Amino acid sequence: MTAIVQFLVKHGYSILFVALFAHQIGLPIPGPLLLLAAGALAAAGKLGLVASIGLAVTACVLADWVWYEAGRRHGDKVLNFIHRLARDPDYHNRRAKDIFARYGLPLLVLAKFVPGLDAVAPPLAGTSRTSRLRFLAIDAVGAGLYSGVYAGLGYVFSHDLNRAAAYAGRAGAIFTGLALAGLSIYASHRLFRRCRSRRESRVVQITPTALILCEGSVPGRVIEELPQGD
Image 1 (cartoon, rainbow, N blue to C red):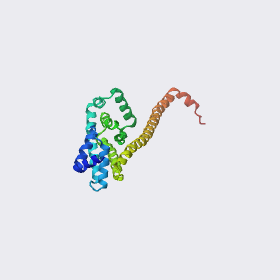
Image 2: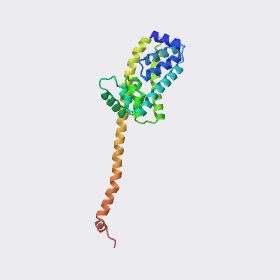
Image 3: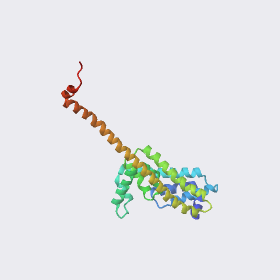
Image 4: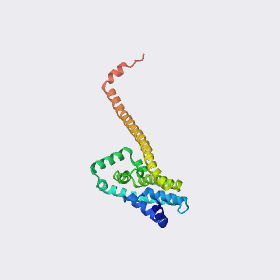
């Protein structure tokens, strides 16, 4: 951590932006550790916390936008490229699609806390033809949460960054579990509402037809059974 802090002190905001962009593109750069270091330097007065988080969000969203556009234009070829080194690329492609189909676009809010998921969520959003504006808005929320959590840990534990790094790993796992639980509840609620809406639409479609059939089948009997006036 000391080497990362010194490197960030030397190069400042520019290296923070470039490194986080490269990390989100997929290069093996420790993005969370850079955010921890930025938070610690903000606590020491050498960087601005708001400026660091703002740059981090911008870098992440721009990198994710590249993957989104790739998914929008090339579809499954992008997933094949991402999983090309996996033992069973087809399995990983199906699993990624199933996860995105289950949780939908809100998955972008927590994707950056889950290694592997952060790489496939943006191109899957592009493949699903999600509008650019909606993608950018939700991805910015996720990037802000990701940057704020790690930079905030670095700010609070600036006196002991090794301890902050240990907490960062636990915080990511705990937050991911809670977020997945919340998304599961959301997905279940959405599925329940969809099923109820379908049942109601069937009732609306069947009822008029049934009435027409009843009226057209035995009109005489209906008239005869009506009480006659004097």
